[in-house]
Length: 432
Image 1 (cartoon, rainbow, N blue to C red):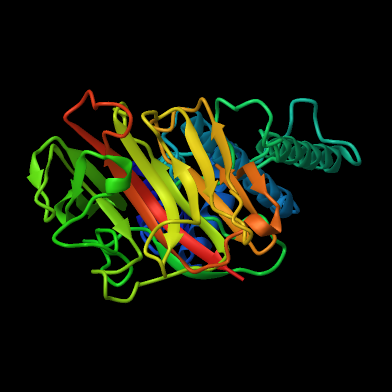
Image 2: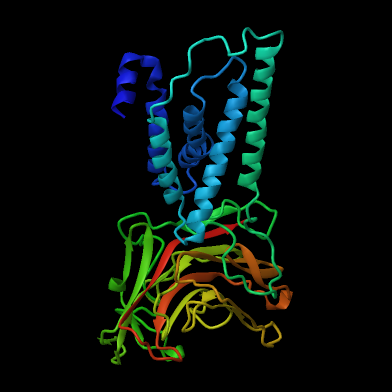
């Protein structure tokens, strides 16, 4: 590196390697910006599509002949795409994928390549066979450029030839052992399910220093210094202290700690929840939604026995009851997710739907769970793939609903651990 820096001092025009080396760290800093922000998108995209390949080509081709600039630029983009695909798939298969980690790995690689001391090109000399005949140098140049274009095409095909992301599967087909769909820590740029345009109605990626009270309360609408769901015979009393925001994630923690609720009963567990509802019975809800795409990136608890995490919607006007849309429920399991609709038709008939999807290790990393709730149907998605659909118009709710995520305890089974955590990377609602 000292030789590179010395070369920069002696040749001001050679500052390009330092700019190239710093590009990845600029892109990494940009990942701290809001996920949909244009500055973040521009900085990260520009780096991923050009800089790693440019650094690699710089080492491999120390000197360019006239006319090779365009073909070399294409090769740099192709190498960048291939490296980005390779790093992304490696982290994804290792269940360590995040956008920031991809950028970090490529930033380190780009820096190392950019600051590497290149082999100096040989000086002009006559080739061993004597002076080249007519077309000799030009012929070699054409062949060299042809090899560059062929390499670029092969690398681009490699980058694009991996498993398709978000490919459609039959909701009733066999379960996949590897998740597909949108990157778990990145919100969808365009929610699935409808060609009509969307606009964000609510989005929180939990990058602040605490829970945003403008969006969330920490109890049901019947909050009186905490709350529980007596209808499910659960073992927890919800308290605000069990809800934390740190390191870009919302965490709900269930702790085996006896707590006396405002109802006079003692609960063996204390846990956490968030809702877009009311601070108390007589207040107004923070947010309600009628139709839209509702999604969240969730990591299920590692110790799942006796745990009942849920991501769901309930009616705002009645403060509970039917209808109910369960985007995702993990009932004593972190390998199977339940997708549910509970309701009644206008004629009073049951309007229920259910699908259990798995096995997938939902505790190993974040997975995206969502529903596209339209006037003529509801579609449940797991990692971007539809897993359940209801199209009976009489069964589709049309009432404003509140959004909830909670970590219930003791439903159907007794816990085998003393603490458990549910992590949420982001929550979003998009509407037409």
